Length: 306
Image (tube, rainbow, N blue to C red; front, side):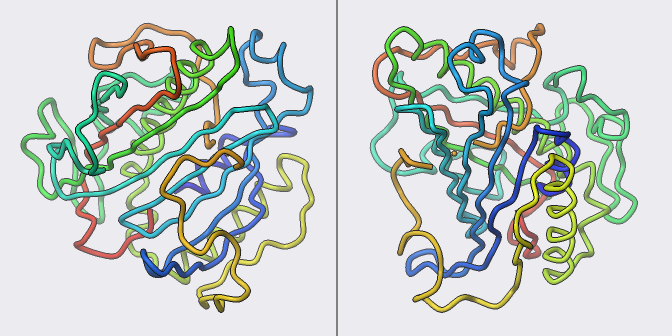
């Protein structure tokens, strides 16, 4: 799903270049998959942001996927800018308010409940085939999702995202951090809609077929945006600990050196009350958001990739 979404959102000079995609073994979280990407998005930034970034601008994303737990760290060559996303999946409707543990979070953290069916998406991303009000899966017989679906559907899974954005530049911090949170929310909404709308394409895939699909799609995407990197290595064979890339253990704190999958920047548009236009967060330090995205799946019913 991520590979297909990235390919759709990419064009000449803009989009997602996959640099690395390989197995990774972590002493705490076990077997997983490590990916590194470059997201080129200069032309998709608002004018006020383009004025302060280089002409050729990209961010780097490194992700460790130990489904049902994943970590994504993002950075660019802008100073003091970083994004860190932790993801956990549980079979509930978004009712776990302490899924990330630690002390109870106070007013600095905005909790945003995302309805993948009825929250509005940017008009330019709308496709009738991905409108979950009218979509019905032929292979799983899931759908149509009507008002109140979160309280009536079974199985149901919630994707919890803890998003931390830091941009410690005086005069721009509040504007940039609010903008990034808004963009990430829209990307999560679109991506999770597509995960369900495309279920008939991936539900029967083996992991070998998933890796082959990733390889061919990612190579096509790299060519599409105009980059010509070495062949991407994607395999199922775990790498020995002496040769694997990345830290000995997936990071548990926000990364300050590596970057985001905000693949496209939405236009300004009105939202429903359930989807605030901006996130009202305090200025000092960093900004945290917790996104809750219920989906019509059960993570432990069959081992599907994220």
